[in-house]
Length: 349
Image (cartoon, rainbow, N blue to C red; front, side, top):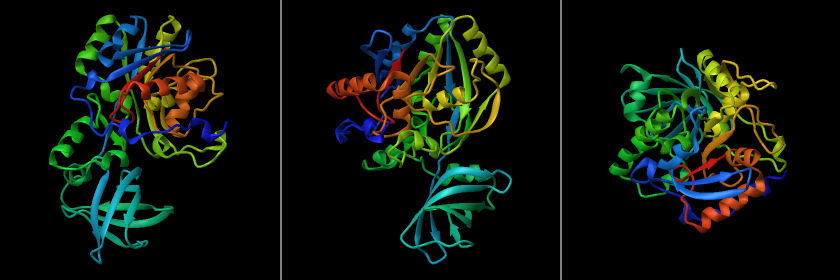
């Protein structure tokens, strides 16, 4: 399939620059793949589509404040976006660097709170490995103080202020975020509240948290016209033995697996064998799911409305069928749904 088949006109006015006042008050479009029906609901109604035999699988990754601002030795301003941690021991990250002039290997970047970055090597266009050195305690404690939420460019275009940054610090994070390491939020999970999770538990649905640290693999778009030729960047994930056991039991008893987001989906599908058995795993996945892929684990998908030509949109099309996705997106645009990270949700049955 060609990349242009996953294109649509994304008007600026349908992009949500801010979250709704209450997470679960976002709208929810419900797609039934069997009868090709579409319903319009509120997210807090999502539990009505679940049964006690089912499992809800969520991604508990935590977004790090991955955007840093510093200066070169010459005084020039530098913006650094953390992409992927290469070494925990030496605190080495692969980063995107934005500056008016070139940077060089072995040069330094000075950040607030006595944090220094030494450029180790170039890894690609605009990408560098940086070793971070500080004398004011734990790197992540310093990062929490000086870093900013790695918001997508379309959100950064809004007018920034202290209040906006305060909102983002809380809302660009799921309420169940635990394991730090993501540089973007698993946005399908942003709609969940304690009340919604309580309603789901009350039914008897199994709630399970796995981890996939959202990185470049999720948000860097394909650069090839033939979709199947795209190579995803790897992202770290973990599924414990206990969680794999529970999910397998749900499947064996005829229950459905509801996957919260494309990241959760990729982690689950990466660890499921051809017989449909989920195995515990810890490592990296570059699984790229596109039309033609045979899903082995998930039965239902909770997601958002994604960018044109993006890998999440391509995954949703593989699960739902491209024609049905296009129909749903047209209806969403006509009915003023809010798109992208802070936008509304979609449940695909």
